[in-house]
Image (cartoon, rainbow, N blue to C red):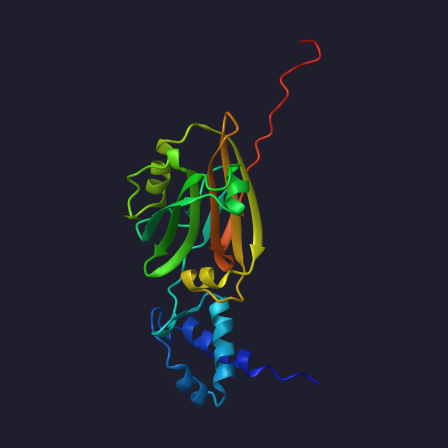
Length: 246
């Protein structure tokens, strides 16, 4: 005896099919949740549960105060290890826009451990939110010691690399980059910022870069939507050039 599919999945399948066949276009606002609940003859709670399935798949995004919208197809994000930041599967970055909020603060909590500094040490935080069109793309918090903080980082840029270049101007050459990658649920703030469901995992990357003296010159906390993010690492093995006769 076959089990009857849950109504939430039946509704999600129907809306997903309409999106995939073009009956509901990218960027379109779905009918109100009350209208959809009435159309499918379910409670508002069941309808919202169905929409959460589509939000978790990245097909629909809910914008507070405006409604549920069909997302435009978004490019996959690839994090390239070894001190680089992000790249997308499409080489053209003209559609990407980076907004940067700069804040001076004092080291506290996790930051003291990441940067190897004492509490209250002066730091600068660069909160970088990348958009693809109107949709949030990725989120990064970059922390540097105040004496290595550039003063002319633009508040908005059309390319991630221009922000990275500004941060590298005062930074000494890197000798070591440590990266930790984990999958976890987003915080409510991250979910709201990236317009993703709390049920969707994110790829969280912690990157710590040190110079030749061992001083940590940058700590970055990156958050990428898990349904379209990959981490890519290349290891170069050094060959032993010594020979038994040498």
